[in-house]
Length: 272
Image (cartoon, rainbow, N blue to C red; front, side, top):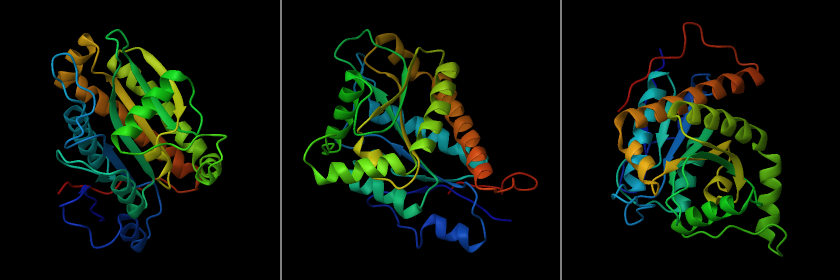
């Protein structure tokens, strides 16, 4: 029996002796197994702050932990970029994912607006172009928090050309597929307005070599939604919806690669 467990990486935490994927390959497992969960912001970067003081960095870490537990129970190997209130650079976040050779990277955030009226859930995958002006602003806010500036499509920028080719050819379809699964599940489970699946130049998504998606689980700047996001049942509903999306994506991922479902379900898992 193969035992899988949660790995929580980050500065100051014990590094693993070898990448997660290498351990799985050593026992002949090539199915969808490794998921990296990235709780946005942290440390001095508090992210968005709601009218009554709900901090994005704390909210998304809570949801990420709830999601990790569900995925471990489903037999998946989960790697967390951060397990506590610490700041991670863009490079540290992407290195965790790439070193793990993960099958999926999911970055979890909460949205914000200068107006208190916007509310709802939206999901992103990477592109040099933004779906709309709102998407561009969201990406700019998240990139700025990481001290990163996205390359601009059409600019005389060699990096933009390289990233553009990678985004178009590597994992684009699978990132879009998972984004749709996540968005549909989240909006239904939370009973919130679906703001749709969008594309924008999120640098953290451009830096990983696997299907990648960023979810905005609600607006902490909307008083009513902020109150809902404080509730345990809402956070559990979000985690459950994301877990279902990950599992459904994994089943499709395996089917495309001709990997048969494991007899008797996935291996047992534990958290450490």
